[in-house]
Amino acid sequence: MYEYQQSGRYFAQVADDIKDIAEAELIELGAAETSYSYRGIYFNANPESLYRINLQSRLINRVLAPLKTFDCHSDNYLYKVGQQIHWEDFMTPDQTLAIFASVTQSNINHSKYAALRLKDAIIDYFRDRDGERPSIDTRNPDLWLNVYIEKNVATISVDTSGGSLHRRGYRMQSTQAPMSETLAASIIRYAEWDGQTPLYDPLCGSGTLLCEAYLMATKTPSANRRNKFGFERLPDFDSALWTKIKKDANSNIASISNNLIQGSDIDLKVVQIAQKNSSIIDPAAQIKIIQKDMFNIEKLQDTTIVCNPPYGVRMQNKMNLSDFYKNIGDFLKQRCTNSTAFIYFGEREYIKNIGLKSSKKWVLSNGGLDGRLVKYVLY
Image (cartoon, rainbow, N blue to C red):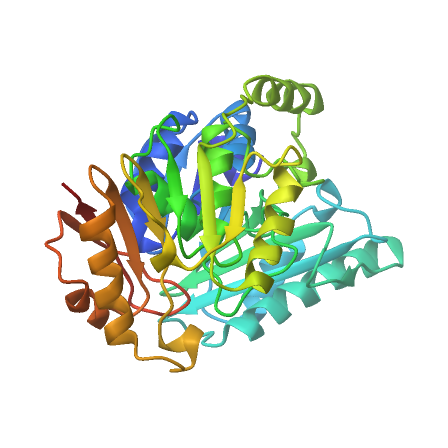
């Protein structure tokens, strides 16, 4: 038996900033005995919960199923242990694999070299056994593997997600420096939006916040557009149970009113990108997106406002951003009575320019940026 089969324990890779809401989501989806670790959360799950978490989680990046944990003081020992695993349980030699690795405070000090040695072990295993060898495909392999080495202790795992779960399949085009899907889902979650009151993004860009709000409001599984998952490669995969999980999840998908989720942007090309992206998950066009300058919006009252305003990286300093953020603050103060705004600042120095007292702040990084999500209750 492999380690995950004996322990029922898995590792969810998730951004450190959002572990609180990611843990709550995991528990909602059936996880138990959660505990924080660096860049992730350990949890226990049965196969049903494992499948459901991969299908429905909006916040985690991937779930790893550990096969073997062992002392690893050299690359030769990594190779040796790699050859001891029965890889035919997971793939055939005519299929493809990819290995991603991370190392810290260990004798093997290059992650790419760790991945290379495990790859050599697997290829040689099949070559010796079958006279054939699998190929490497780093974009869309049949099997994703992970090797993690910390203080000379290594864990080899199967990526049960089959690649990062942030790829929802709706972002066909993007604008400059787009917000990640998991970050957008985090903002919707922190906003505690109930999916009943109006939600508006006046600086919608490629529409990621609107799409994540739609998936949440309609209870659409975030990974609904995936055609394969890594857990389907596990030797104990239960296809009948997986079919039931998908059927149950899809039966819970709900409709929403036409004016519940709306957005706009000043740039027509950007609006067209957002409309195209949203149409992938919303063919009935219930998400309403139009071209409009934010400062020409007459009012946004009794609304949950979410947005990710331009900042230096996105705008390439084409405008005076200090004045721009001051204008956003004036707009919120003067035209958004009884609304609550959740503004994501990719560069937190602009928070002071809003000129409004915040109710709460969250640290949320985005692609290396030390960002902040700020809540403003507007009266």
